[in-house]
Amino acid sequence: MSAKVMYSQLQPWSTVGAPPLMEQVSGPPVPSRVGNCYQTPKAHPWRPTMGYENVELIPLPSQPATNALVDPCYTPAGMATEPLRFPNLVTGFERNPGHAARAALYTRYTPYEWMQSNISHFNEADTNRNYAERLRGDAVRVMRETDEKTATAQRESGRRLGERITDLMFWRNELATELERLVAETNLQQDKRRDLEKAIQDIEAPLNIVQECLYHRENRLGIDLVHDQVEQALLREAEVLRCCQDRLKKQRESAVAQLRNNRASQHELERDLKSKEATLGIDNMCHQLNNFSRGINYYGGIEKFDNTMSVPESWAENTNRVIQRSQNERAKSAQLRSDADNLINSCANEIWDAWNTTNSALSRRSSETLEAKSKLQMHLHKVQQELFDVEKSMELLRKAIMDKSNPMKVAHTRLEARTHRREIELCRDPAFDRLVKEVHEIGDSVEHLHRKLLEAEAQHQQLLKTKSNLESELQVKVNSLFIDREKCLGMRRSFPITATIKY
Image (cartoon, rainbow, N blue to C red):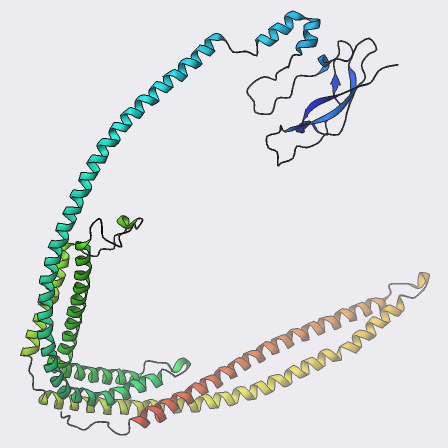
């Protein structure tokens, strides 16, 4: 009776589910039965990626079960070495002492390797020790150099800050003096502005009317948004008004335009003066800081943040430019004088002529639009009558199609009834052929009527579209007439200013 020996054998996870293993024991192969395999938990990554499974061997009667039956251990995928066989020194020594000694010798290092390892450790210790000594000497030297360099840099920064404070105080005083002079000149310009503003305001009324007319005419719809003579006259009138206004403004350059320039220069002076006063306070604080001042702190990465907008040359040039501009504006403001009586009268005559021209163009355009409106109404009436006729024709076509329904039913019923004839009587006689032909003829007639109905419906849609277009166009013309006659001409019945504009 054969003995059964149970033992554990390492099996890689890749072999789970493989066919049964065959063990070789100095004779014919002995079958083995593979048991269940367990999986290593992912929470234990140090364990091997293989599991144990029970293998049942049935050895030959003459062969005892020993550890010599164990296969070479599994080598994981990717290893460069060959699979290792772990010798059993006990059983191996009993069977073959020489083989066990040789196997144990292969698992040891050689004396040469041991000596080379020691020498490597000695050399590494000497190298690191020498490097550390040099590093300590360099550290002492670097500390002295950095201390001197830091003190020198701080003294140089303080000296530069003092120079900068001197420059700031000089330019601040210059800006303050110029600002006082410019404010006095601006007050004088205010009186001149009041005298000239009346002439400019008198032109605003007709200019507003022209702009209102243009805005109203922008509400025209569709094709009536045309660049006609009325729009051209309105644009010319607006150009005349603006030209006269510009000519008057040139006469008041000493008041309005120059006052605007004076205020711009004053704003620049005030802004530059305010910036310099704030900068002076900051630089004074920075100049007084030292290594023992309160409030000093680290600001990580501040040396990489550069928000400067100028260099010393452009900074001084900007302040000098602001002062020079203020001086120039004051000189211009002091010299400007004008007398605009003749210019105002000529502007009034030009405005009156443009006003009459625009009114005449509006009257002519209203007459043309009224005539187009009458023709549109006539065509709309004709299209509506044609729509009525087409709808009647469509109803007749639908009735004709419905009338073909009963004849088609009669023909179909006859054909269906004749299918019940028996045996030889089920004959394709002339009556059958005529019934089939009748069905086809009625179908063709219905199809032809449907085509005509589709054509009539398409034409009906076209007429509806034409009617809609005519109605829309008629509404456009009504809207245009209302804009030109009621809105534009209504506000242009009286001239808004007198023939002579006086201050």
